[in-house]
Length: 114
Image (cartoon, rainbow, N blue to C red; front, side, top):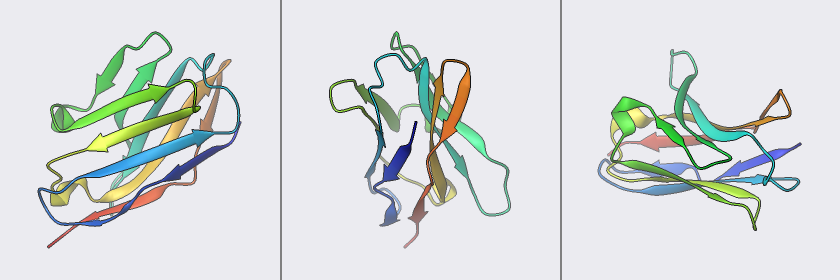
């Protein structure tokens, strides 16, 4: 399984970005997909994850601002990020759990700054 993340960039505080994670094969059977991030000098942390059944778990600080969606036809997971804050600055990694194994995308940098 290969995951290709894209959509990062520089945005001003209060702005929006949409990240995409395209999988190399059908995601229909993927147990979990999601996004993690690693800020400067910080450990990697969970941002949000979505199960095959559609259940989601969000990091408290992004609840209400970020939305994950899963498109089983396009084999892609999206992360819509609104009301971005400087503390959201990080490298964002796409993640998938498939048949007991973990897979990671290459990461995409999000910088929130004026």
